[in-house]
Image (tube, rainbow, N blue to C red; front, side, top):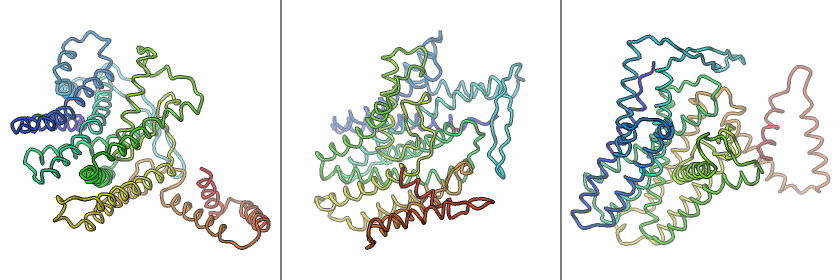
Length: 446
């Protein structure tokens, strides 16, 4: 049975960040900075309450007679109690033999085109630990993007305005960044396990390192860009945040309305229609919060019974990072033109270059992860490099077609003849060139 290290990491970040936020807010109170104190407490206590509710919801304790658990969650000590419960289950399971087990079937990663189905016995203790790990993973994502991300942005903004950094503020910013990166990492792992639920997924240590570096560069540069822009254009940043937030918040609902699917009723049997709507709104709120700072990895799909899209859409990933890079570049240019005297001793062009290179470095680590270290890369219909080559081929073909001086009718006739000639397979198998052509055509039509 695996050691519950993820539970320990989640609880440590939760306790450490909350304690640091309370200490920093007390320093603001002693200095008379009421606004900074209130905002620091808000971004600390709000995710605390959401984490308590998430743990209760996943374990379905609201409908069970467990007064001690409810009391601990009301006192904001639910994660600590759950952590103790997890380690009690873990150590007792190694001493007692399970009288009842259930059998689960998972398929192994295909080798040479073949995939074997393996049966595994799962005891009650292991099932309980799985539920705890799942609950803490979701709680970590909520804490990261609804609490730690705003907290990091706020503390960095205060540091820029005051041109001074205290030990407490440095400590809470470090913990907040670690919490966001860890939440994004858990989001990646959750996305992989949800999309490939039929398979036995094993994530290697190098994959964790690659995801950590990818998310660290992506999130750190995004936060710094937002803080720099906010420091010179305080009113316009509200428009930037609202456009980003409502774009990602409304996007799943627009797709749901366009699909014409009935309203989902099977999320939780104990929930009414109003309760289901509240849960869906909270999920879209979290989805928007994640995409404000980084790629969510999980695509929310309300018309799907599982609420998650299991398709791997490289085109959507490409559009997101291209749009985010352009947005960061525009915000940095606006900061450069409107920067104030507080940046007198800052080399602005060098800082802009460093931030853009840092963001591109994060994208590079993402490509390395999907190309070499993704645990389910054998199941991809096309790899990252193949999709990128197909996209370039499609782009070059489109540009050459526009520059062609031949008449339209002649060009279409030649293209049709060429396509018919390339598509005809041989008696043995289709050539690699034909596969690449169809990949490019599919990407263009996506």
